[in-house]
Amino acid sequence: MRKIPVTDLDALRSVKAGEFVALEGVLLAMRDRTLARLSAMAERGEPLPVPLAGRVIFFAGPTPGLAEGRGAVGPTTSRRMAAYLPFLCDAGPTALVGKGLFDEKDTERLRSCNILYLQAIGGAGAYYGARTGGVATVAFEEYGPEALFELTVRDFVVMMTLDGSGAVRR
Image (cartoon, rainbow, N blue to C red; front, side):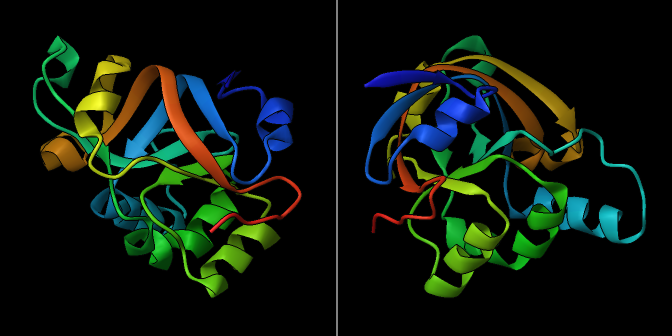
């Protein structure tokens, strides 16, 4: 299994649908509440607290204690984020990581926006928590585990579902 830095766009785009990889680096973690707020900010022309372009976004919210090495961070169901795909397409992240599949229409939207989609393992919050070495709240601290976070990860195993050639593994 290849280890791929999340900043290495060429390496990420070379991963084939169905292939497992171990991500390394800093992910942005957010859930639907944060996505709704970011989307509204963008609609009003307000600057986002952090650029999303070129980043890998993990649909997740860490539990309290993750920063101290005793928490978890499990993936959130990606279909819940589908309403925010137009915003994400405009914002330009490299890839999205979440649980489960998007429907055909949303997969096509991601393909047309050249955004990769990787699946995390559902129910593996403790596993992913153990692979998270740093947690920083970036914005919306008042949202608790639904705030916007940067997570520093290593050996963060996920499966490519929508690859750089547009192929899908369901």
